[in-house]
Image (cartoon, rainbow, N blue to C red; front, side, top):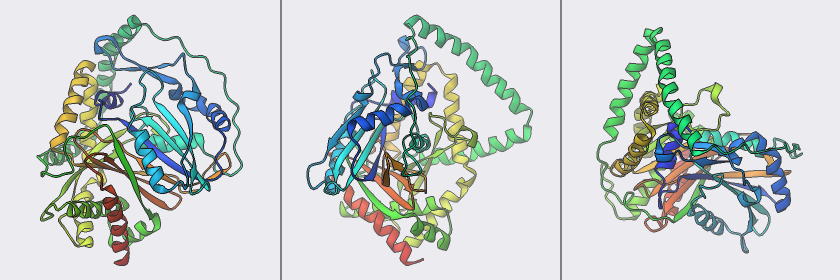
Length: 455
């Protein structure tokens, strides 16, 4: 397991659940449980991680490893349920919040798939796909859709492949492999360093970008303003969503400049402005610190099922009432990231963790999560999805809503996903301290509408 993947295991505790999810809504009727099981079974050879569980090296002398689960039972991971009539959006939101409040069993492969019938008086159904963040990042999750869905209403049949789990490694084997990695890994990293030394101009450019990014990174790690967005959280979650059209966001971007992500962050800022104003908090000269994960996966790495993300830290100008001024402030702030200088800095820092003994990595990641409580107020992750219509078992996929986990003292997180011309904002809230995330969702939709009116 890579250092970054292991991070998501080390920071998990009784209240920080590090699983992400998506809710895909389809036209009805839903396939039967047996049909769903056979569909997933026929695809599992394409995603071997879904038959693997985690083993920890004794005394944490090595990073956790993936091993085949000798007791793998697909019917444990696939669940079938139904919403009571009328199958409203509120009922779906409540159901997802309850499922996401429960941790995954670490003794088994870290995923669940819930087929949920009864939406819209039985006219629609949904798949809630839940997996631990150590398995996949947002970009990989998008690629996983290719395994489950078809690009045509005619199902593509796949013959299940025979599978025999490999023998589980003993504790002695785990310790031996960990020791071998400690010996081999520094050599491989030094070999890579020698290759870089053959390109001094590249080194100079990367060090320059690293220095610029690190300066911005450290600036935003300063103490964040006191806010109801941060504090103690519990184990239970609320979840809701906002929707818009991708073409509307593109029109705003074409008219006023910047990037699509700038527009997204601007309307998210409007949502938080409405939320904090409804709570009676002062908005004067206020900003919100948000973590914006970005993919650093190279094109040739697409399709790999592990994490290739780095953090960018941005400020949402919620104290600014004018929507165009908000957008301009974000565009000016994010413009320097076109070269991904913050991402370079963060990715370099992340790669350095590979030098440290894993037991120190575990301590460092837990410390990082604790220190983030005073610095990061929310997370905003934007993942592009497929724009052509997709199908499962001949049923058309109508829309997809994402789910992002909460960490540390962050009480609200936002994930954004685009599919077939739609842009959806999945909002996760701590159940006790964020009962009003619907205000945030409404503010996001109003933020798109007001910018569209000015375009």
